Length: 216
Image (cartoon, rainbow, N blue to C red):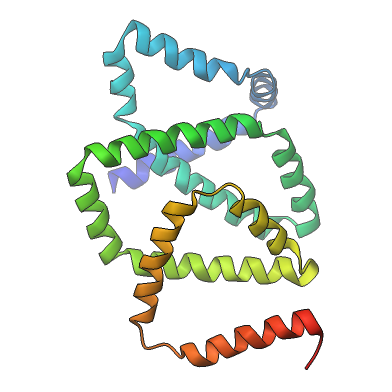
């Protein structure tokens, strides 16, 4: 009860601050003047001067991520409910154009390399990941596949060749040996299921023939 009251009071204070024109001007000015390179410099300085403080801050990262995820979820809900699609389209496009794509790729590569090194050095991490995959993975994967299927169908409805071009570019950059091993594992898992593979294969062949030679 005390926690709910405290949260309500904080919410009221935040609302009052946000309504202040002075706060809006300060926030807008500071956000527009943020230098992206300060993030990199801050980490280098903090780790070089006092790693203990740095790792103390890092220990709070899970809580920060939880807050960020909930805020991001609510942000998406609010945008969808309160603004028309055309306005959102222009807004989101402008946001995407302002993102530093090279920095984003470097960030992804750095975290992927860190994750790979930890994976090799941590048997307990592999065991925990396997346990999570077996317990929660199927439902999560099914939801992701359903969402991806809807996205693919929506995109190809307007541009039938979009994903053909996408797959071509992906195949040029993948590790064939690793993907080959993974696909063999996945194929074996799917073949173990009681799916109607014959009808699925026939539909695939028929659609390919239609695409190449026209309607049958």
